Amino acid sequence: MVNIPIAVQPFFHQVPSRQILNYPNYPIKYFKEPFNQLSLQWKNLQTKKMSTEKINKSTIATKFGTKAKNYQKHAQVQPVLLDNISKNLQKDLKPGQLWADIGCGPGTLLNYITIPDKTALLFMDIAFEPLKIVTRNSQHQKTITGITADSEYLPLKDSSIDGAIMASMLQWAHSPSKVMDQIALVLKDKGILHYAVFVKGSLHQLNQARAACGLHNPVTFLEINQLFEMADQAGFDIIQETVQQHTCTHHFPSAFDVLKSLSAIGATATSSAPLNRKKIAELCSNYDSLFGTENGTPVTYRAITGKALRRNR
Image (tube, rainbow, N blue to C red):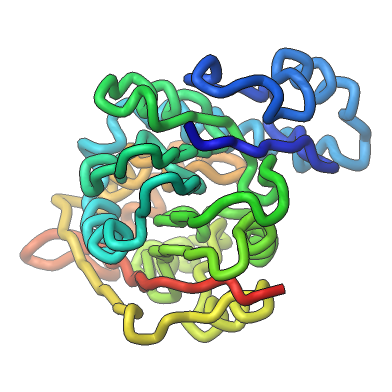
């Protein structure tokens, strides 16, 4: 059995309930304090200064949670990216290691890899519902653990894991640089990060349609060079030969169908206030007018995949 070194760090309680699945598989001595006390402590830590961020992240967690059940049915690009990174990932998974899938969703990764004997995999997500789906997979009951966790405040001890997977989640983070810093912190020296990140150019049709309605874009996609600079500052070396760029455009019958598809995978799960029906109608009208074609209304994703190594401290 692989030891799971989990610690309660400052501002750890960003999710309103700290829950862990398959917890009986791991001795309690590897945790600094029992998880059944954490929800109470979270309530006690609610201060006026921190309350806005807590409420926003709790709302985001709830939104992602409600979409978890149907995620794999509606996700079109994410499985392609997972398939891409899994080829190098499978080579790096070694017996006896501890890995973490940060922002794991419903565990789609398990469709693309085989977990070696005596290797443990932590599935971590801000929403609890996806973790229930992951841990129902009886084939992996003894090797996976699901933990609700905020990627900006990972509950793992420093230098404690051998590798991490960060697939299609960084763009949703409030502070992408903080996520990169946290992953670098918990990885061992020479630890491995496999990543898939949506970058500038993703959803550009939607963003232009929103701008035409006077709406701001709730998600900011990084330029590729920004991502690499962020990784370097966090302590990572990008393995250039593993870097691949991906562009994918899907067509839908209408802009409204585009929005429904994005909603179905949780892509609208931001802290921004939801649009009313009038604004949605205006947005769809602009979207169809600007980008509608004979083949339908397009939505484009741009992403980058690759591998990075944690530099020695």
